[in-house]
Length: 147
Image (cartoon, rainbow, N blue to C red):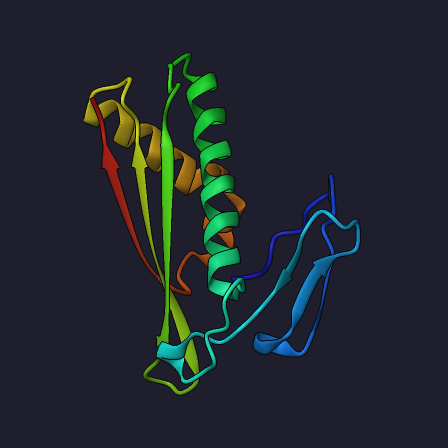
C-alpha cells in the first residue's frame, strides 16, 4: 500500500540526544524530557524520567480524543466528560527487534455503549492520524465503555 500524501497544517520537530537514556525536546521548547530505560528492560530506571512509550501513549490518547470529539460533533452527539486511556507495551517481536502493542479504552459516559462504539470506530477508521499510521503494523485493542 502506498503512503498517502498530506498537505501539512503543522509540523512538530523533536531532537534526541543519547537515545533511550538521553534527552528529547521539541524545537519550540514545548516538550523537554529526560529519558531512562526502565528496570524491567534492563536499564537504570532513573527517577523523574520517561520513555518513548509514555510519550507515544500520551500523544495517541490526546490525538484519539480529538478525533472522537470531531466525529461526535459531526454527528451532533455530546461526548463531554469522555476520556481516552492509551496503554503502550513494548517487547521483543517474533521477527527480531522490538515492537509495541496498544490498548485504547474510550469512556463516553454521555452515550449508550452502542452509540459510543460507533463513534469510536469511526474516529479510529477515518480520522485519527495515529490510527492511520499504526494500522496493520501493531497489535491494537480498542475498547469502549458507555453510559
